[in-house]
Image (spheres, rainbow, N blue to C red):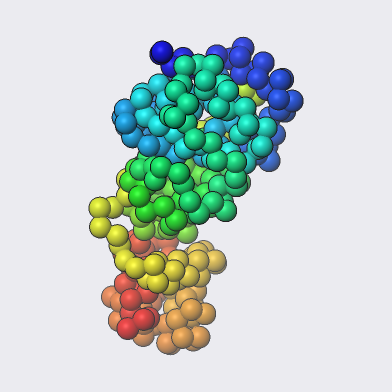
Length: 282
């Protein structure tokens, strides 16, 4: 049986059936355009036989587009009503029962994923998008690539290069795991209700070789947080709290790492921050 997609009329009917009123808090702007969900799946390079984790499937429009490829889906949904209804929606649209696993849980607290998915696909709300992505990258090393739809401001920050105005702690932390890139704009008109902000697609691939140990990652992220806590401060000042306690001690560690004490956090690559963490440890 061929998998079919949700249409705008059915999405509204499902929302009424479940008494779901789209809310800003949960980021429930449902995608009602088939071409858009297929575009997301295409950008994610989802293939038949792969296991995909989808965060926040909602009513299932993107879920069905993933399943249409022949991939299997582990869907993580925090809203109990939506989690309970999704298997029935999938069955009604021709999905075999063993192709979809629904996990009724908060994505920020989950530590296990059935099926060990290798691809992440998601439509994430503004307030949790970066924490969810970083949690999943840290917790599930088998995730090799993915695509997420997020507010434009979030996506641009995740993919920002060093030296740009929007480059910050999320940019560096995401880069720890591998390269991230903007992969397309999404029209406001494909959502119901229509949001008042723009959305983009962001694609990522995990580096084949990890950048370092978990201890090194934690040390690097502490330094990153300190560097961006007060933007435009010289590193010898911004990092003094985590590099010895004084500007002089911080300068000595920075010089050991090959980083100018007068540089600013916005100028550094993730590898620069890693060298600082290694110099502190050594």
